[in-house]
Image (tube, rainbow, N blue to C red; front, side, top):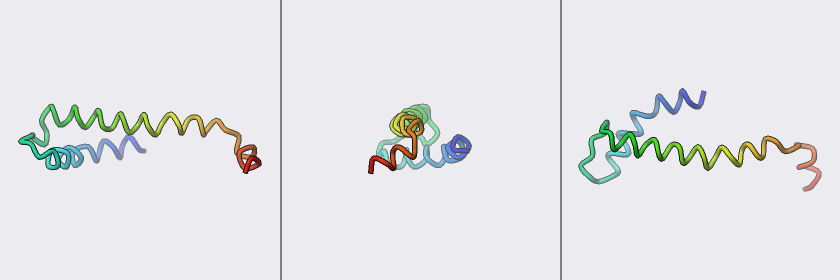
Length: 66
């Protein structure tokens, strides 16, 4: 579901990134798509790995430690 949402939002994100970059960058140019892919991969990496660690934790044990 999240991948579908990201793929649907990618053209809009590309336009916004090109607009906010301030340079004369085409909204659907190669540089914009590469920068957008790097940004999305960085966000994925920052969110995914801590989430996997937390998903392996035992909920009852975590509540007991509080």
